Length: 333
Image (cartoon, rainbow, N blue to C red):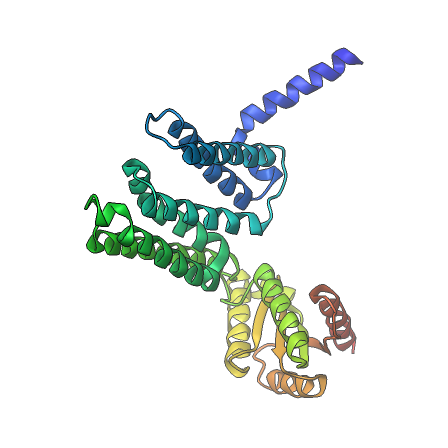
C-alpha cells in the first residue's frame, strides 16, 4: 500500500510538471490570485535586495523585511491553492502608494525614489484590470495626487534637484495612460466573453451577470423587474429543411427584432441554441405581458414565451426556472 501510494504521488507530481506549473496553479485558484501573488513576490524580492545596501536606515531595514516576508507569504498561500480576497489587492495598492510617498518625500534613497515612479504604471494596470473603471480612476487619482505631492515637495525636487514638476507630470501622465489602456483592454475582453458572436446579444454568462446586477438594483430602489424566456418553435425543422445557414439567419433576425423593439434599458440574452431570455427592468408582470405580446405580433418566426415578475430576494436562476416553466406551458398550449 505504501509503495503504491508513493508511486501514485510520483505520478501526480510528474503530471503536474508536464502540465506546466503555472497552468496547474491557475486551475487551483483564480488569475487574480496568481497575478497578485506574483506582484507581491517581485516586490518582496526587491525588498530583500534593499537589505544589502550600505546607507539604509533602521526604518528602511524593517520596511524591507516586512515587504519581503509579505510577498513570500502571499505567494506561498496562493501556491497552496487559496483564493485571495479582493480587499488584499486594494491593500497592496495602498501600501505601495504609501511606500512610494515615503521614498519620494522623506528618504534620500535615489534608487528607490526612481523605482517608485517606474512602478506606478504597473500598479495602475493592475488596479484597472481587477477593479474596474470607477474604483480604479478614483483610487489612482488619489494616489497620483499623494505621490506627486511627495515628489515635488520632497528632497529629490527641493534639495537634490533630481525630480522637477515636469518629470512628475510626465510620470503621472504615463501612469494615467496605462490605467486607461488597462481599462480599455478589460472592457474589450469582458465584452467579447459576454457577447454571443452570432446574434450580438449577451451570451448566457453575460446575461446572468447583468441580470444579477439588475436584480440587486431593483431591490435597493424598490422597483419591479420581470424576466422572460423565449424559445423558437420548430427551429430544428428550419435547420433540417433549409440548412444551418438559414437557421442562423432566423436567430439573427429575431434577435435584431427583439433588440430594436424593446426599450434601451431592456436586456436580450441568448441562453443557448434557440432559447433566449429578456430582462425587463422597472416592469411589473402586467406591463411585461403587454410588451411580450407586442413583440410576438411582429415575429418573423413563431416563438413561445413565458414571463414572470421577480420576487424580492429571488435568484436569477430561480426566476429563469419559473419563466421557463411558463414558456413550456405556452408551447404546449
